[in-house]
Picture (cartoon, rainbow, N blue to C red):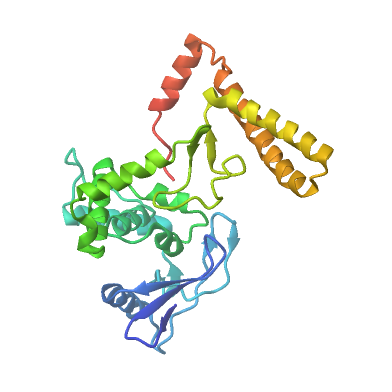
Amino acid sequence: MLSGCHTPRQLLQIAPSKTDQERLVLVTPELADVLSAIVSRVRAPDGRVPLVRSYDHYERVWNPPMPLLLQDRMSGYPRPLSEASIRRGLDATLLASGLVDSVGEPLIFQPHDFRRIFITDAILNGLPPHIAQVIAGHDHIGTTMGYAAIYPTDAIEAHRAFIARRRALRPVEEYRTVTPEEWDEFLGHFERRKLALGECGRAYGTDCAHEHACVRCPVLIVHATERPRLVEIRDNLLARILEAEREGWLGEIEGLQSSLTHAEEKLAQLDARISRQQESVDLGIPTFREIVARTTAAVTPPEPL
């Protein structure tokens, strides 16, 4: 159904089909001319499009009378064009166009091929894939990307064009040559991240937000070689807690207990990381039959969607 909007453009309303939801597609002037020509051809003398019944081969039921655009008059009665008639007309049009494939044979298209051609052409010309998904009526974007024939050269060229557009939008001063002072400051940041227990994982250009209480800091990256030092810190905290309890320093016990908790957590995380690094995984040796099966599966062409 064609519906007008506030602008000179028109929208094509598509009845629920793939996702059981109605869709609106923008109609170009060329498509509007084609649809107008079809409507004019099938319109009855009273100006209405005749209602015809069609058979659904998938559901195996007769649909109620509808104003189908692809219809013709047979024996004086309007009848819907069959699928075979549409395919024959498509083949005749391709033959008359003179288009051939890579071996010189006339091109043969299936009606569904035009969805693939449209989606591929739209995405290659800058249409976002999630917008193409809505137009095509797909539930998942993976289905849409499966329709699009994107080749490695296209991906490389598109990425280069994306980088060029980003650079054109960014301020020019961001792409100037780095001064020696700025480079020294950048390298100095990583020098200041080196700690006795390992490295600080804070972001570049930021100061320590934990007042250099590294044992309590969640971004402290402890090196495996510094495990004895961390154990020593843990044992020292235990001794200081015992001393504070003996002397009655209740205000200090809480802070020491918090540091002890973080030290034990970091020690447990370090032990888990060391254990994972030392574990060996037996991948096994594939048999000849498994190798042949994988090779056969790799060269099998994908089924058409």
